[in-house]
Length: 81
Image (cartoon, rainbow, N blue to C red; front, side, top):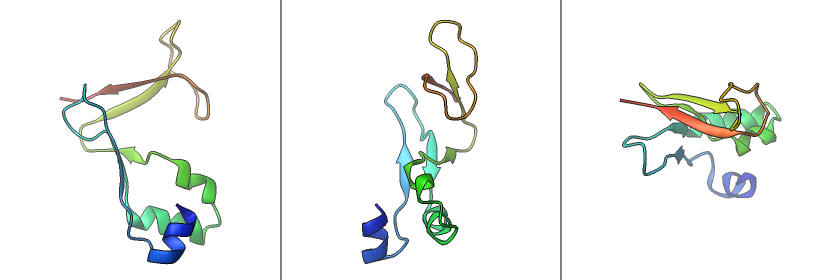
């Protein structure tokens, strides 16, 4: 992705979704890609973006259903109308 941005510029717009949710879940727009590169935060390019309008996203422990802190691995839970 970093090489593609260098070649084509910050034109990419990533989305995350799944068939169980009828609308998009997260969005990572071109300006966020550019910000990640100019802020020397290329790890941010691995992000799925921020939740879309009227969508709530959390990462939860599969056993306890407790919400996990940032950076932890768990089940992605989405609520949307």
